[in-house]
Image 1: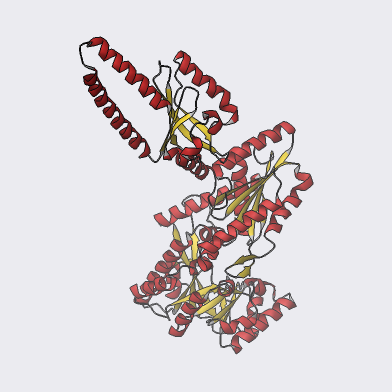
Image 2: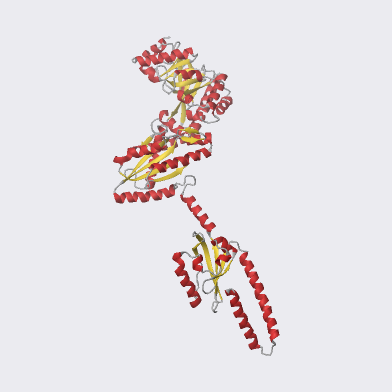
Length: 608
């Protein structure tokens, strides 16, 4: 018989005695009928109570007698703690679900409630599953028959496993990267500050390496994000294998990692640490069934030389990494204050350049290309100029690379196209004797997917065609061009546009590449022209370039002609066109109009 049934019998006996005491004249059978009604009501209530407890799948309810032995165990308790009801019946609470360190306190708390009426407060606990694993619950306790000889304690336990799991997942998501499981930036900064504090106490240094995977966007675009994620996970594994337990890592963004090496002196191990990180990338990565070589640019900062907080070290390593990227794939730079000042100057220069675009602070100058035989102006090259309202002019050699790195080059390119086309249409309508204006396209500008559509739309707006506007590209742009760019250039070539290779001879190509490119002209770089009169090697290169260009049916232009000696040599080599200060410097549009109108002439010493 259960403790609960025993309690009921005691209650029923007391009820009988109370009725008999109040109504001694009532017949026994009448009293028995009343008691039977009460008994039925009690049993119905008991059934409803049990049905309610069994209908709560997430609420585990157990009943215990005054000795803490199980008298009730619902199905939810079985799911939560692993014991079937038959296994649990009659067993002690502390032997079933109470972890060893909690057993004695639980026994004492139960006795204090039974004997002294001190309730056990509801609380979050970790109780024990049959397997030995801990189960997080919110446990509430109820005592029935508290002041009787047969008190019953019921424990109502709500499973908190889902909530705890969600809390852990949320905590992980806010502190770690979900893909690589590395600390995120906020967590890493806190860890790094602690490591810096340790280094300060121990009078040691710390090396921070900022790693940026080269052209990771292209990997995602070409192979898909799944393959890109596999690369990042594999890189993380390699970095873990190459570092010590005391070293720290973080994934700061899509393709950027930082690795901290505390406890080092830079003089001893700096080259080895950088080499260790580079070696991680040495072996190819398996992606999409094939092996691909991956490189990364590294920026390095040092504690205490380059900062004494995590934020400073990360920022300065980032600055060094950005400088490394300017040198190309796989480059390494170490932070110093001069580098920081230089990059800060560049950042401000980009802001000023954008303001100049907005306010009309840029202009195009034009430099004629002159026939080497007749001295007549054949074409013009449009050259971008920036003269700030205050201060000296800023060289295109300084601001064009900055525009390319900041993507401002696309706005700049559109402005050059529009301005050159508008000027060419104006001179056409004015009846000036000029054939073509050539404009320069950078590699970053050509990477824009709609660059050719924008070029042709600009020409159409001003009613211009192939004989009015030409293109100049460096040979490196062509070498790195993908099929889309080459196909677009072939289409323009077929339409009759002039496409020139600028600064020819300074890039990475060989002459054999010329037959693969849709070009019509070569522009020999000024360095060869400058030194050709005195350097046989430069003269030989010029002669070879002019000879092969002509054999391929290309027009050849010599850039940077500044004196008569250079001109005579160029004429001797039968170069087609000459561009340089000997005839004309680049000039604003109004001054160029006077030249084209015959009001101003070029160098008077030339004899055709």
